Length: 105
Image (cartoon, rainbow, N blue to C red; front, side):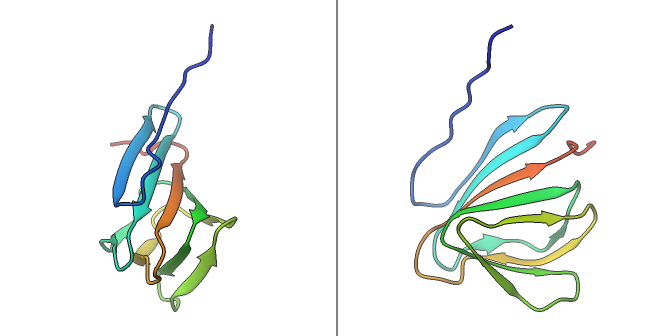
């Protein structure tokens, strides 16, 4: 069996790309422009967030907002409230989000 190849964009404008969605993982590429973010929600799987560019501002459960720079990987447990996921800085924020195991829904 040969490899499978997936591509994601290299733009600076907002994008949410579901690069791989299968029974094993969800692999999502996300770019947020300054001031943009995601709505409040609960994680539907274990979430691994890799900051590729920019600075991630994130508030989880009852904690204050924390900031993470490029080169950081966060592990966020299943069913954690994500109060804030936002780009509060002047440069684009680029993330890879992996949900594993893949959510059942």
